[in-house]
Length: 213
Image 1 (tube, rainbow, N blue to C red):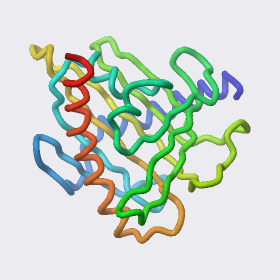
Image 2 (cartoon, rainbow, N blue to C red):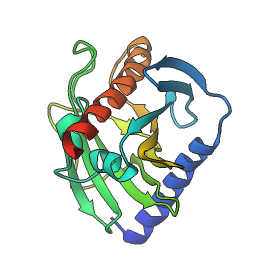
Image 3 (cartoon, rainbow, N blue to C red):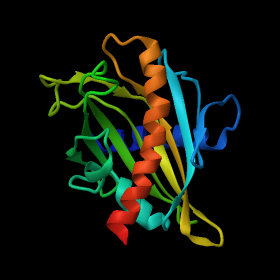
Image 4 (cartoon, one colour):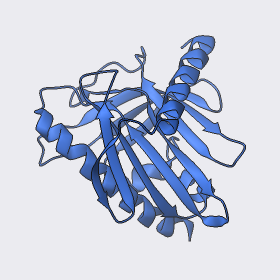
């Protein structure tokens, strides 16, 4: 992939995700519990929803980031029940890559295994926050593969943010913005994401304890 084009695309993606983070308007809470809030609003990218999750994870931002950062052979494959594989298709720079993520069947197998090919940009901010920013991209080295429905992530990502005066806590804000594709009833999709995101936070907390103690 042309590095200059990839850089421009990724910065535009990151700017969109940062706007989601800053924009408090239009969100409707659809699930709350155990310190995690999940809300949604209609997507402007496709006929579906953009979901936002927010919660506090016990662990320093660096430790939380270690569990979720988008790297091949990383910890996320070990704890995230919605990720069966993660591979780098092309490494463009140290912080920019094209990746393929595979996910298992879900919702009592109403949702069959999916794969997603994304342009992913990692950023670190002066206040110690980390972010990942991703959106779907086509890549010649990764055509659709048998056994998987090709899904499409629209601009999405997460922010691991330090809490002032709380070095062992992290505010994690996540944005899921996924077109699962295929022929799925909208009710299945609408019920799947809030539950899945709530479990994501619970499983991440266990992973931080397990892998970082």
